[in-house]
Length: 148
Image (cartoon, rainbow, N blue to C red; front, side, top):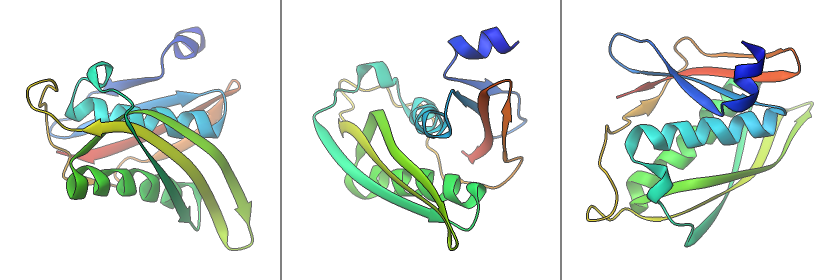
C-alpha cells in the first residue's frame, strides 16, 4: 500500500453523499498541494486548466486541521468570487509558532470557461468531517470530506 501511495497524489474514498478524499505527500506541504488539486478535480478536469493566472494565499490555524480547512476554503472562495479554477499548487512553507500554524502558497489556473472546462460537481464547503492528518512510513496523509 505504501508503494501505491508514492505514485498517487490523491484518491477518492467511498462516502455515501459527499466527496471523501485522501491526499498524499512526501512532505506536509506536498500533501496540502495535492489536497487542493483533489478539491478542484471534484469540480473539473484539472488537466484542461491552463496556468494563466497566479494567486498567492496565506492560511492559518491553531492546528494542522484548521490550517487545511483554511487553505482549501480560501481556494474555494476564489473559485466562487472570481470564477477561477486552479490546476497547479505550490505551498512554499508551513510553519508552526506559538500562535499555531501558518501557510503561504500559490495557486495557478484560469477563469472557468464552460466551452473548455468540464463542469463536474460543485463543492459547497470544506468540512471537518472525517478529517485526519498523519504521517505513515515517511508519507503524509490528509483525509477530508467536501460537502457537495
